[in-house]
Length: 269
Image (tube, rainbow, N blue to C red; front, side, top):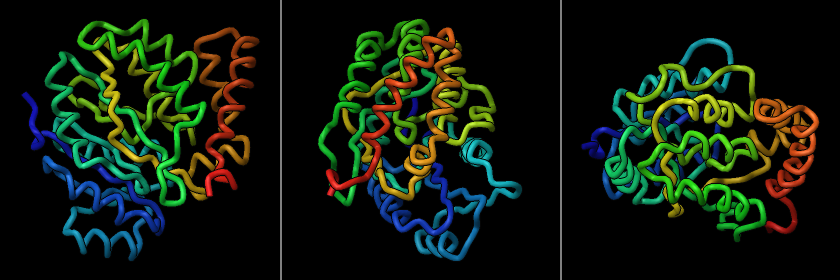
């Protein structure tokens, strides 16, 4: 049986993010306390001072800037059996650790466990839009396949897009490969990881409760990549793993329309 002592939040910090302390506050306020570490490949005074202020271990990865390497580094620096790789601008429910541990213990051979989520824009929770509703519908089958082999179903789900909120994911390290993320993608390294992990024996566990607030803002990596069309190219690459190219292009066009919901515009003010 796992406990909160078996869980680590590995917080990836970059640059001088104004939301870093807000994320840390949410981790410190967990109902069930677990380990918190900070990892970075862009050390600076801001990150170091925040680490010192909250007395959190800081690990610095040397080498070229690469998100996949940063996330793998965070994965390995967490010495516990369960690890959540946190983004520096999201907010976690006080019950996140407690619920994750409970759901992992309720099921066998868990690969990853992840939750539903809110979107946060301009310091407010955004009402569910069409994209969020579609993602919830995509994940409905996993609600009814908990504890049972779900390899085929999760691959069908991933063939239609990526409904899994990356910072909501907790990894069960003993059931996973040592290298989770691969370099090459800037935006879809998580979708790429889920696709590869989906072929492992074990289960994806979906928690329908909203346990995280995923912040969307103009400086986020996702927003930048959508704006410069890089995300669209990566989406096509992923769809081509599941479908003939002509079908992949059709799905990619539809998926591109949904990406406009990630835009922070007047409707979000």
